[in-house]
Amino acid sequence: MDNKEIDETRQGEVLERKSSSHTGKKLFLESYGCAMNFSDSEIVASILEKDGFITTRNQEEADVILINTCSIRDKAETTVLNRLKSFKKQKKQNPSLVVGVLGCMAERMKETLLEQQKLVDVVVGPDAYRDLPNLITKVNGGQKAVNVLLSREETYADISPIKLGGNGVTAFVSIMRGCDNMCSFCVVPFTRGRERSRNPLSIVAEVRELFENGYREVTLLGQNVNSYRWNISKKGEILDANIPTTNFAQLLELVAQVNPDMRVRYSTSHPKDMGDDVLISMSKYENICDYIHLPVQSGNSDILKKMNRGYTREWYLNRIAAIKRILPDCFISTDIITGFCGETEQQHQDTVSLIKEVKYEYSYMFFYSERPKTLAERKYEDDIPEDIKKQRLSEIIEIQNKLSLDAYKKCIGKTYRVLIEGISKKSDAELYGRNSQNSVVIFEKGDHKKGEYVNVKINDCTKATLFGEVV
Image (cartoon, rainbow, N blue to C red; front, side, top):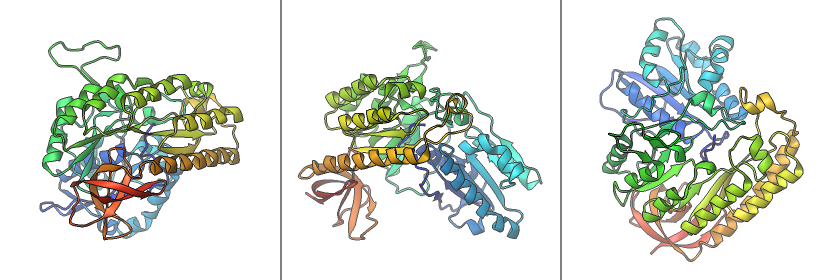
């Protein structure tokens, strides 16, 4: 899966919402992995709130514990398994406690979780969240409960997600589900099913409601947002002549038109589907942020072919050139995997040279982790020793750190419009926010408040943060 939010070392986020009317049943909900998982958890909370649940941050008082899981790397699964084992003591003290797993690990590890290790009572796949109240009732009746069926239609478009654990300023909006790309290293098509897009009117309505509730930034989510299409077949044919068609470039404009003070971001793009039309739409609206996450994975065309990425090094660099031509102020980030099956030192150096040529402002870098059921696991040997994988990863991290610092130094002296997201973690006297390019900016609090826009002149930086003063 291409998603900048993925980081198997990220701690699970506990989600909570206060409510004035509920039946007394308490839900402890924890999420791991990508932004889509966190968005899904908000859908789950909405479904269960209608069934009388209120979320809590205290797992000890919970009647139901649900863990939304990530299966993208082995370490991510190990983290979740260890977390589930930690609930065993609580379950002994409270036998009526229901423990469940949601998301990507559900389909892949249902037998291990339910029967072999007996860690959970409920296993629910990403397309079956509407069935949760029924499944929990089944467990309370003494049965194990599983629903991991994938859907070709489910988008949860009619559900208004409860915004949990956020800052009240920025929000995720899911625009599509599933993935058709079948990258050889990735489990997502097997755990999330085929691509299907939400009705654009439901997306615009959700964004409008968020703005009315004080939110000032949305991130449109999908495994591959560039393949979003409404009333258009994969071959480009109109499915129903009586319904307007909408592609991703058009959806971006519809969302941007909700209000000029509602910032719009998106994640994640696939290079093979990144057309100039999206870049042109971005250039038309100041509130569509100048930031694109464009995962390359490798700088070598032969490795890209083995990864089944659908593009070459030359195609990718052509897309980078288009971004820099149409959006000259745009920051670009990427995902990179080192040590993929059969990767030679020269092929690794091709990745190094591409990083240096593009000069990414940020990168999300990992060494290859073989995942069961993928094409790579079936077809290729995971033959690069782990010490070599880590050595290559260290090399590109060092290069990227220098590029990030160089990019941020170029920001010094410039003034950016910053959306305030909250109090700085290091000082109550400082606020933090982000500019259009997705850079974190720290500045003195003054009389300013969360949710406001301020103009900040940059006077210092690290490789990951800008520091400035309001002007």
